[in-house]
Figure 1: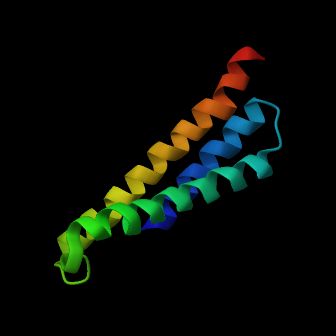
Figure 2: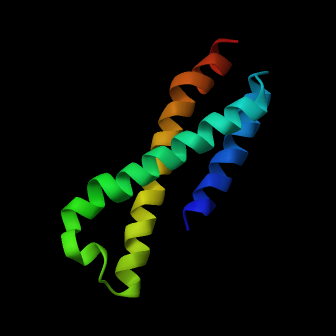
Length: 93
């Protein structure tokens, strides 16, 4: 499920970098790596300690909600990185 967010981030960063006349492959790499770092941090650094043992033993709907929350957190942090470093440069140029 996390790969869906990575594909979204890759396409979004690629198009934004082309508009900003930056190296799109560098920005795709930055976006996807930052997405995975923040998603994994959310999954294992926030959700796992909060849920405790329920993180390992849960129903399917709970598992989907856990993965979806990590996906959303990763995309939001990717959007923040894009806005801070890439989109602002597009607006100025």
